[in-house]
Length: 89
View 1: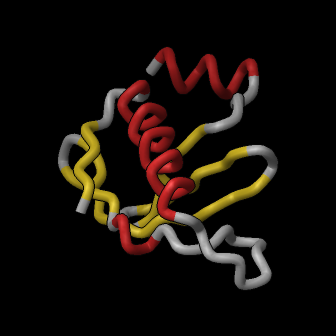
View 2: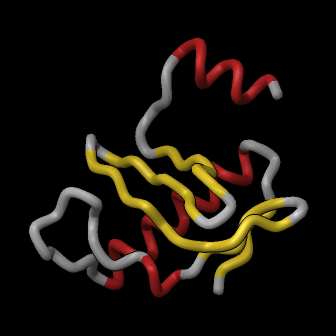
């Protein structure tokens, strides 16, 4: 896919998201990383919204509702730009 080639060639800009495995998406923003649980679909990814709780490297700091909504918008935008359908659950 051309989008993947461009990201690999020119680097990933913040924020970005990528499917890591059948059960996880990695989201990166401002040098921080979050692993978001979900399930791979035949044409995209189902995101488990309740798994967006803390950053991977946090010290127990919880994500606010406003931050969760921003992260969801960014993840959806990033995955959709890669041709994936996104379902929130």
